[in-house]
Length: 110
Image 1: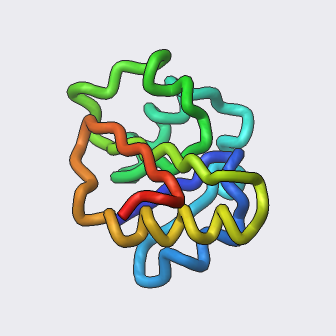
Image 2 (image 1 turned 135 degrees about the vertical axis):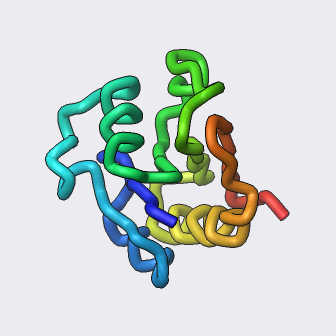
């Protein structure tokens, strides 16, 4: 699975996804791209999952018919501990990734 971390995701979370093809928007040269253009670029490059903190993306972008899934991380705080805990929840839910869908991942998710 190819996973793209949006520019607002701490880069240290990439370590959680060992065994997956993980890139950051910054390393792809897409740090300045906003939602719709970022999604299109990610799809063109074959990414299957975009991980972001942008809760508004669900209201700004139509995902139905898209190739990739968008996962919104919603940590309790901006601490590394909360980001890692939330990232681990996403890691456990990667089998739920479906094209054209949205996932919200909270630290408290089962």
